[in-house]
Length: 148
Image (cartoon, rainbow, N blue to C red; front, top):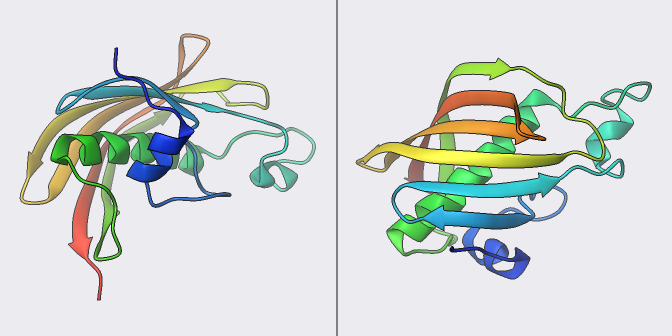
């Protein structure tokens, strides 16, 4: 089993607080898949406005957490780490479905499979689960681009 603690996650993602959305990698297989999670706390900044009377994790942040897990898998697969010369951008989110609200106290499990990678464009099948139930799923596409 290949796991990663927060120190290794920080080595493989450019994101930092308050936008780092992966707490631990449970397992990964280079070139294939990753299972990570994010602990959802009432102290998350987005809960103050989404929604004060009924805090729910925004769906776009669930997709971002899945994309960050995908980024870790991609960097591990490439045998590389983030640098200041390039960045990964979303280039597509297809068939996104949100099936269960993610609430404070939940542990959001992030499951990502690489579908294909060609010419710097990566396609993934992703699913977020809480207590074994699907909270969200989609197909994501990301592209690595040089920054000027």
